Image 1 (cartoon, rainbow, N blue to C red):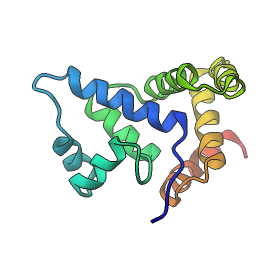
Image 2: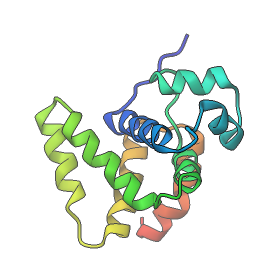
Image 3: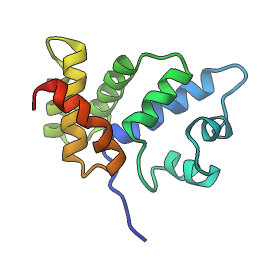
Image 4: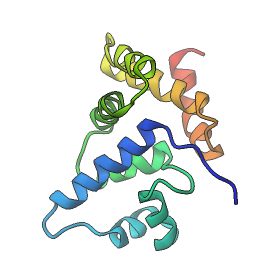
Length: 138
């Protein structure tokens, strides 16, 4: 079985979504997210246990929209959570430095592109990011 490396930002995204799920009334279930994202319940359950592949940026954006959260601010929140949770002080410092940017939207695009390209991202994630890379001028 192929194992997938989960970055601290991938785990933070799942943790943030779990928080949103528990805050809704009535509580949002994994079944609700399966309907939104497609796939099987067991596959999504594994993802919430940090197994299989992490969520793509497109999936994360869909979930943000479902909960009425802004994508850019939510991604920034996952970066902050990851920087806090990461035990590697050099990685944590790098994430914190990346968070401090000029324009939030430009910084989010830059971080998302760099993160996906440096994390051996899946085909869907890279495909989603190609228009953003063009926007960034690379």
